Length: 431
Ligand code: GDP
Ligand code: IMO
Ligand code: MG
Image 1 (cartoon, rainbow, N blue to C red):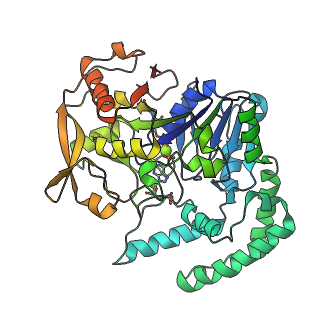
Image 2: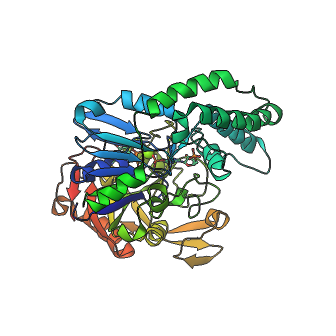
Image 3: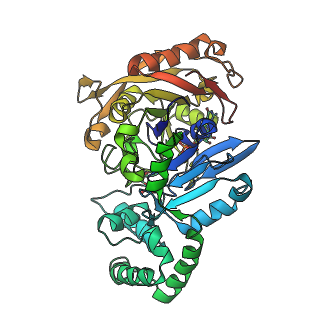
């Protein structure tokens, strides 16, 4: 890692392999920071013969003597945090990793998860709506509370009086909605308050000032890696709204979600899966609903790391990728899962869209327009060789090198790393 401050983000609809790339880059970082989203994320790291799935913790937790920060832009489910930390082996104590949870991060409460499920059920049944296919982790309702300034923050969890006041106010607002609109039982204050006090005692172990931590790390010349969750096309502003998540997943999100000044960011890395996947509803121009889609799902084990849902699969979409290049200002690309394309009978890549008979190479900002986009493909030569053992670009078959070269040419962004398998060592490092 030759830059001090690097931001890593997803360029598609999530699950590009951000966790595995963070794990590789974290070997040369001092501080790893999550800055948005919550337990809707599922970031997989395969190291030392073990598979870890991080939902809330930064994917640098497996290295000794690192500082891992959960920034103010996150929404944190304390029960999930406890489960995740207790399940870690080696544990943070033995490995010496310091975990800092920002006092400004918002807490996901059980009523957020309930409201998430209720809203999805209503949208799904309504003739004028459609379920978004959320992860059910309470993400949307928690961010709603943040922006309507009623949310409970991590810092409130350790002040019993403030917690009681805020919880009472929230239940006064949420219980009538649950009962009268959704026909659900209300949450009792006493029971939830008792539980929340327990979560508060746990949260207190990690509570800190992430803004100061990051500021002093910058001043000390420490190498900081920001780990985006979800991805560009799921971003609340720049994604395929309303089929998005509720946070700022693009690179700029780290400036508000973790207080790094924009002028201090040295490098933005975009993680690109060698094909496309999407979980949940929303437009997906290159989706393959046939045997090709099945084969990609099977070869790539494309099932959600958080919900276990089968992921929708399709060809790589360079129109969407070029949009992500622009929105995030990518300096380099980490290309993952190239090995999954080995052995396909055909190989296609989308270079343009046909929308209502007009060809375009710009990504439409509107989901309604994107729904009408028909992909214009270029066919490439497939390859049959197993590439898992390749460690240099020159080890790759010619057809795979051509595939990689087409991505670089079309995006004008250098590929700095290629994933040829899920393990830490299954990596071709270029830059
Ligand atoms: P994230 O949410 O972006 O971190 O990605 P996920 O962890 O949800 O999904 C990526 C999946 O692909 C995980 O199961 C990874 O272990 C796996 N993976 C990552 N990189 C590669 C790769 O280069 N090759 C293969 N075969 N699997 C990979
Ligand atoms: P990582 O970080 C893939 C999707 C959901 C749904 C939409 C909204 O592992 O890449 P939400 O629960 O956030 O309100 O759901 O966003 N989604 C993801 N898809 N990877 C993720 O995270 C996702 N996080 C949310 O499937 O379509
Ligand atoms: Mg994931």
